Image (cartoon, rainbow, N blue to C red; front, side, top):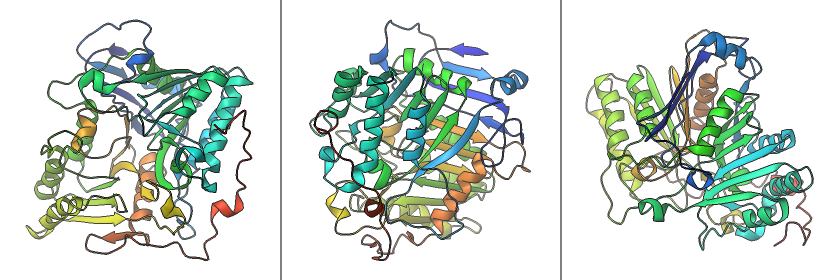
Length: 461
């Protein structure tokens, strides 16, 4: 093992992996490469200043050692499917984010550590809708874990704001002895946010994905993540970041995250499928917008130079910027430039109704992943320049070494993309799909799950 600490964080695990429903190393061998990238990490959790060096890297390439450590490790995809969004029978299906989070809390024996952008887990935090039930249940479970079971709760979050006061974490600190630290990016680097979504349980189990600590991420927003059970190698490596990584300031404005994404694109030979909420070759949140074509150029080169088929599945809804279609169309128009150049874009619209339209920032396709014929990438960043220059995010990469393994994480992720791409909710760029309605015959989860009975002393604040 080799560990270096410094500017960019880049972790690589190299070992044999495989499995059936869950991926297990003792079943079907493949190579799994985990690339874990944090641009600006959890400085407020530091108890002392870390040592500096040129690069954060962990290489675990001894397969026999890794196999021994990972013999009980299980990896699987998890999803949040918004109420009213239904796929045909037989479609790819995975455990829900809600069930996974509840499972992880129940498994905790010593500690629950969460890195998050913000917390809005109660209906009072956003809008009084019964679909907040799952978020409230998770918050109550965390409260009981810290208060009644003596589980140590450690939370790293973006600095609270008027829009995100993080009342939930204040409550957990008061009632469950949670240790809460806030990261102020404006003070550190003049802007940006902590955009990480990470759970560590007992330094043994891990969740990483697109879901925020927000009840809408469980019932109103389409999310995707990965859970790792009994994976102490992965969890302990993530814990090093949670404990001691400094903010890595990149002088060139590029981090390991973007390098990992570019590596996936550049190594693709057959296809590249991308599913993200936003796609812009720009910085969106800087005082002056800047052109940032790093990913766009890589996709164009793959399509033109290597004839790689490109598919982009991008969110379309009430909050989508109209200008996004112009950039997507410019990319798609390359299909007509030369023979065998194939770039196709579809917009994914989560169906809604009059009731759900009252919930702000709901009904969103929030996935952040990419899959090629050999590689899968799951991250926490939207695809615009800001997320790779001033935002803290984490991503993982999986690579198949054995094409005979037909149930790897990569295979599962490709199946999720194809399911979404071919669904009734995905439409070409020129289609009007903003007002896709939930069929009245669809049974809503809010109709079959009772609302949480509030206790003034516990969760209604």
